[in-house]
Length: 247
Image (cartoon, rainbow, N blue to C red; front, side):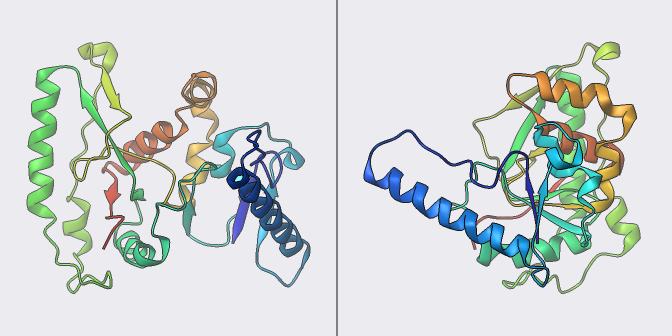
């Protein structure tokens, strides 16, 4: 029920003159007004978080800021540009939440991206680890998202092997593939449809990581999604979990 807004509620203005764009803009304005009215109603659980009013700059990472003070442990994210229409929220969110309940220490998402390593040794190490992960995670899932026999804490803790690399030591480079949504072996999750535990907010904004946040702000691609996914994987020692966007 929390709504994070860096600038203002309605940022969907378009310069297009066609009727479809005009109708879309009008619908967005109506929706924005409804959000404002709900925010002003003390009996409504919806909250709009204005970053500038809290002394924060216009920053995509604000949606992960501890000042949000979320009331729930599970935080569901959507990018400011969606895509919303292509994400079947009602049909997949319940299975996704069930998956998160069993793996709340990692990031859960439905729009994955892939990272590959530049050296052959790291690629082989990655493939070996992924093979072990597949062997250890063979859980039947019902159509409603329930897992009949949830894994024990001991088995789930070893279900994902951590694969760190050091570019300075091994002259290693990670290659990001922005045009591919892999069904398996995802290393990065886009924010839309992702679920994250609220405890991670304090780590994402820890003062020791300011250099990484500044890099994400200044880079031309604004890689806040890469920063969050990699950081959570580093902290958890396990990779992200993914769910299908279609049933």
